[in-house]
Length: 527
Image 1 (cartoon, helix red, strand yellow):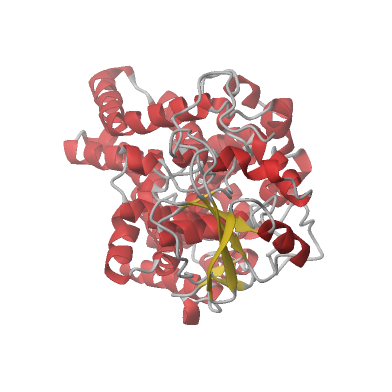
Image 2 (cartoon, rainbow, N blue to C red):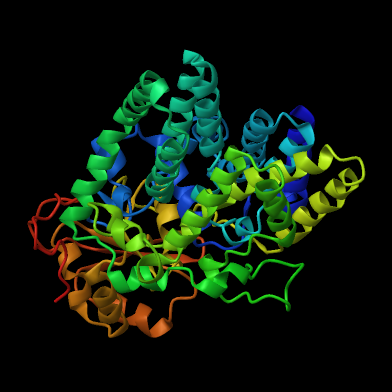
């Protein structure tokens, strides 16, 4: 296992070879989701999780409960928070997490397949197939999707427990289950479905007591997550944050997306379509071939289950129009899941296990075992991706008080606001800009009012507190001139090339963050 882990780490390092010299400064891919998640890691390190302060992520000021607008990444807390405490560098923590997740995914799958096949070769290939499935190339900028090692660890505990009934294996399952629940919202929905399928497949009435113990362990491991889930539900309901059915359909896979590759992929570029975005579900020819061998050749119950489970997860990835996903959207909370195509993540684990069985079968045949090495190389070749590294924004010393409300201009419609909220976390202030998985109704109106140079744009915010306005060097000069002419706006000392203004408070409303709105109310209204 140590040699396998070293190999997985080496492959990971090669994939991120252009990032390694800049681990403390750059992020891979872009400055959208990676910078958002880096800000979340920094926020987690500065606040005790689940406290009122922790729930108030400093974006979309003056709103409260903004932490519930996106992923919490608490599953990474034990690794990333100590790094940030020691170095003060959340970019380094994010990059270490990314490299570690891919490596540990491989190690966890190795342990599971080794348990199931008894073959080192099968285990190595199974770990390789899970850690470096082509699906990974599309999600290297979604760190929460890489935090998947809890799945194979939980399944390892289950397989061992139903075999010998030892309580320590049940503990291992519970820890893996808890890790999955803390990883991302998608696995919170999709992995329990996989476990339910597993239980239905392997249940034996004579082992009823063990199954009761498994259910009890899952319930106990879920208890620590309940306050988190309730916190999300209360805050998202207060703002009316739900996914429309059309949005869910738009992020579903299609039948032909099984041949889709990431736009970052190298090997099959020009041969396979790369226009499916998150619905790029190409499993890889090497993994598919090995998985097919693993399901058909041994004719065993275990690989048959994982093959069938992969098909079920693929059907879920097709969304509510083409598969059984329409049942999920009827459940409370399930409609907050925007991308059904991410059900393919558990499917990659299932295919990895089947591929491990296929490699184990080949390893037992003298004339066929030579195929394992080229197929393993092909697995790596099919995941091979390229992408730029982007320098994370450096903190700027703005002369604003702690927890002040700041408008960082220019304000954009998309992930450009991730820059502003990242700097807000580092600078210990609250920013009116915001970037998350949800779009708040007033935000577009705010951008339009600012673009039209309407003084009313700042009125709802100035009614609560002074608004500090940051004018970056690329802000259009006519807007800067308009801002300086507004009543009650004063120029403060510049911060490097950035101009800073204070729009004095013009109201007596409650200071931010505002309490959660009541049902049907709008937290902010732009006149």
